[in-house]
Image (cartoon, rainbow, N blue to C red):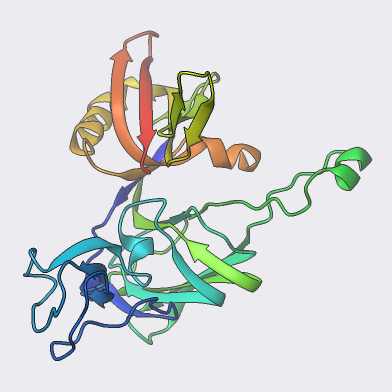
Length: 298
């Protein structure tokens, strides 16, 4: 079990992106009608009044309401379901500082390439491409009848040289179609322990079901979050370090990697979320047993 302890991402770190905004940029001299939407400070705002002019969306809550992140910022807003969407190859350049791992989630792409330079426009110190093909064919029946377009939705790059002035170029190739990314998280990798057998993965569904007086049931489909619980074995000499790490990561979204290198079970056992609960038992002579419960973000 590893965790990527995240570095904060600020708007100033986003150097450039090929993502195109859906709504126009707010202009002080333009008159907006009620319901008009604009982009301001990488957020989408909707006008609450008619003849709305000269009122800054970021400082005028009676004139504007924030709807969510703009298309350019959605992949960095720490919400998994909001996606940055682009046609063809979606590219973003951003500074990270010294990191050794990067994670993308809720992605739609044929392949993902991460290029790290020593400074903006500097020498390339790391470059790797991962295919997002997720189908594992075991026999001829699966070859002919399984969905051939199953794609991975997440990828981890965990061998990046920690260059202090690192600038990352992230390129999601949609294979001629739309590319999208819901979350980008980066930081340093910390080892928690060895994942024991018996890990569990599932989801929390926030959809709603209602049944009327005649027994007719209707569903309102809403978002969901992944969840995972795993038993981790920790050597006694590392218990203090691991507990301090878990205390420090409370209420902090992070990337939890429980598959211990088993690529075929990457999707359920790699999650972006927070520690919901954990406990430790001094079970063996040299090992401590820790149960971790991770709740994913929507």
